[in-house]
Length: 314
Ligand code: PSU
Ligand code: MN
Image (cartoon, rainbow, N blue to C red; front, side, top):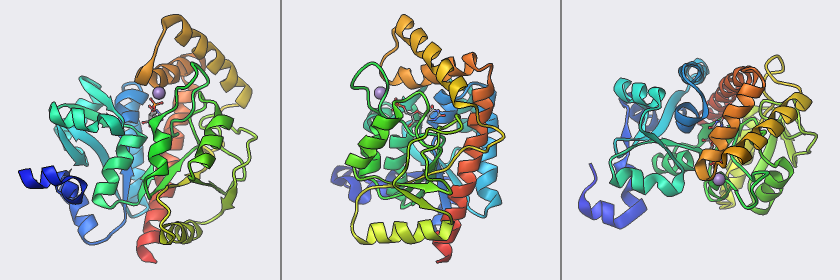
């Protein structure tokens, strides 16, 4: 437990604020591979019961490749790595669990709340524990509308040294603008076995990514070089969703157009926008975007584990 003095002194002792499940603490102490997973995708992004399915599939994928999964969250005010059984049930029930971006962590702590961390919130917590690899579905980015809605994920990626594996940015976003912002922010985007930005649950975007690498060991080499230069930013590894799960781009675009119209009518704003749009796309695709989302989450967890294992072996 942190002392008052430690809490006052800020991030130097912040690692001691984290509560870890024993197997995660043991893996970190032994320098065995650990993969961080976000909790917002299960508490806000996905409906019940698909969220439980997603969580199980991600956890099992990480374990199958020989790494330890670490779901990040604020559990009743305590920053946590790993969810105990009772907390996991609360997060899956989506009851009273707040969506927590990096900026919101302090409020959730001070108020003793349950908080599900987004990509930005997860990046902030994983750094405290020295975890280097993180798997998610799709990062947040620049929204198509209204103007000036840009996810805090982008700026947090710019200032967190980590490897983040995803299927690109969520398809509901303005993808060319998101790619340009990643460029400006100095986030190194690497296509894993692709030269194109993947379309999240859509089968492509036609947008080129600056670099392509085809193996986990190569990604680790590049990350080490990036870090050795003192670059403060993340390496964002993007891979396409499994081909048998992804949806045709035109179908996704039509569903997004309907989702945006619905959002305009209802007048959603702030952090409710992303979960609302994902839900509306799911309705518009008859649930097929949901199946694709689960498949790509598992796929990304597998690659992240492979990278984490390569990192601890080298
Ligand atoms: N991917 C999903 N569902 C989600 C998210 C990602 O399939 O709900 C979450 C992630 O946690 C991401 C967040 O960081 O949405 C972005 O929200 P915003 O646009 O409000 O920053
Ligand atoms: Mn936003």
